[in-house]
Amino acid sequence: MTIKQSSTNMAKNIFLILCIFLSFKLSAQNGRSETVSFLMDEFSSNLLKTNDDFYFSGNHDYYLINKSPLAHFSEYRSIYSADPNDIITYRVLYNPPRPYGWEGVSEKQYIATWVLFDNQLYLCRVEIHGERKDDKFLYPPMEKLVRKTFSKKNISNIDIPDPFYGLMPAKWFTDTLFIKKANPLENPLPANEWQVKPYQRLIFKKGKLISTETVANKTWIESVTFD
Image: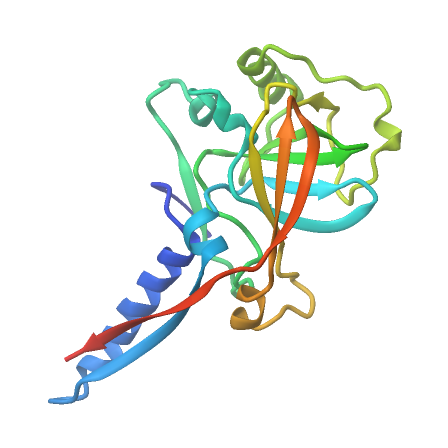
């Protein structure tokens, strides 16, 4: 089930759901006060703000990315909306539930896929969640937004697990990205084990990777007391 909604943080959203669930459970315990603790972490609680995909060419591991490189453009969240002020986000209720750390946070209607090849960052695919749209719908608005075009040259050199449309070098992007290997669907780690895993800091200049650093993921405990 897919629910369109306002953008929110993955960890805080799950935290709220758990709190609501536990409040109903604990309210049945008359006169008892209960404190429930949750492990929080820097990457998913404070940094993660997009559901874009990130890959290293030649490595089929999927990475979460803290923000979309398209955030450089003020209207990037609503380019497929009739009203530029209409920002559509979504939340998917999976059955069975997906592991914590498998996906990012929806801040827009679509998902952009990024690939790092030969130290150059490229946009290579756009999809709208839960909807099939043809290339004529998806790519001209994106090219208009960034004032660049997708190239079909050298796409055979790119090795990622999913099909993609073309390559657009992100030469507008001079900034820092934080990425973390997603918790896989097959044999996922328990949430607390995934949370303590480090993430990477990638620094770009005009779309070129100039620095990489591994960062220890800070964790802390947040507690809620039910009276």
